[in-house]
Image (cartoon, rainbow, N blue to C red):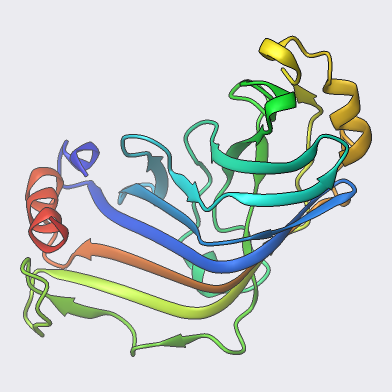
Length: 241
C-alpha cells in the first residue's frame, strides 16, 4: 500500500481471491487442485483510471500441491508459484462474467526424485500466463455490497475501511498456452525434458489447456476516506496483524 503514496491522485486497495478446489489441464494431463489463493495490492491513478498491480513479499499466488499419479517415474507433485508481477487488473471484471480479471504469470515445479531439483514448466522468462475470468455467477452471493469496518476488524457503519466480498463464484481460463518443461533430470541436466514433454503433451497451444476454480471467493478492501499509503497500511495491519 505504500505504493499509493505520492499524492491524492493515487488510491491503493487490496485484492484477494481464493478457490477451495478445482482442476487444471495441461496438454494431456488433468490434475485436481486444492486451495488456490491470490493476494495483490492495486494502485489506481484516479486521473487516468488506470490500475497497476503490486506484489507483496514472496509469491502473489499460493496454491496447495497437486498430485499427478501413475507417471513413468511414479507419482509427481506439482507446485505452482508466481513467475512475475500480475498485470492487467480489471475491477469491474471481478463482478462480471466473461471478462479477464487479471493476468497471472506462473510456473509449475514438478517434484519427483527422478526429475531432479529444477524441473519446471514455465519460467520467469517464459511464464504460463493465466487470465482467469468469472464463468458462472449463478450461485454467487454477497453480503450486500460494500460494508465498512474499523481498524480492529469490527463492523462499523462509520468505519474508515470498506470491503466488497463475493463468494460462490466459478472462475476459469481456456486461453493460456503452456511451454515445454525444462531442467528435468538428475541435477537439472534436462535429460528427461523429452519424457516429461511427451507424457504431458508439451508445448501445448492456447485452447488445449483448461483451468477451473470452483467455490471462488473474492474480496476487495480499500480506505473509505481516501487515506493512502502508510495510513492504509497501518489500518490494514491493525485488522489482520
